[in-house]
Image (cartoon, rainbow, N blue to C red; front, side, top):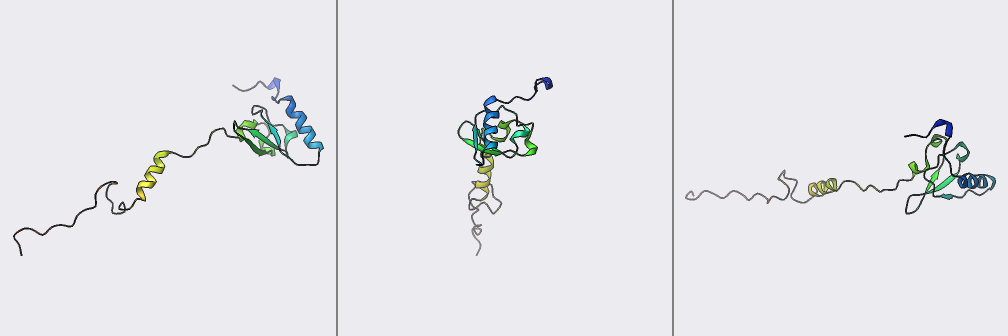
Length: 119
């Protein structure tokens, strides 16, 4: 369920203070935050935030298109390495002896022996 419009966007108070001090200073450094639930406001455009994902701070440079979204959307907490079955199929296709169209793991075909009794 979304937040009520009459309540306005949620932003942690300390986040507004940090953004104001970063705007007033001339240095462009990353603002480290832990509030993934805070909404990105127009005052944050142009700043770089380090959003904590549970392990480290992911740098997020705020643009105009991000206004209205949450900080947590831009710092994924899980790493997707792909499906293991895809890697297994790829490994089996590149295995030696698999290019003859034989089933994976099948023994190579032996040459036909001459018939007995014929010269």
